[in-house]
Length: 82
Image (cartoon, rainbow, N blue to C red; front, side):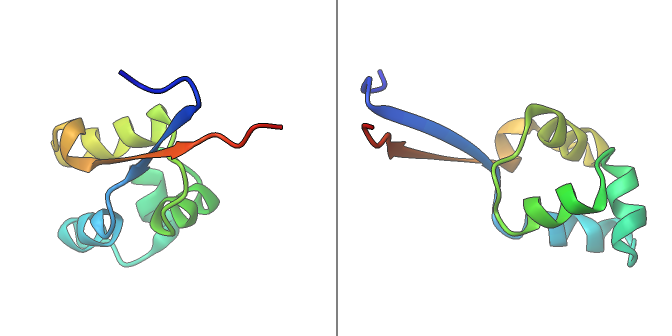
């Protein structure tokens, strides 16, 4: 069970975006972003390890037939009290 002071962030697993793009044979980032149903800024953010939305994670999983559990990297961090 999560501590009340913890938050959980969900990110695309490190290196997965580049691996998936190579596997798809797509060189152009804009075309790859369209395949994932995201825009180029969202793709760049996912590649940098930014927090991923459910829509983004489902897009990656659906595009490559990968189970969601294999693309998700979860990190827990204690929330900072104001």
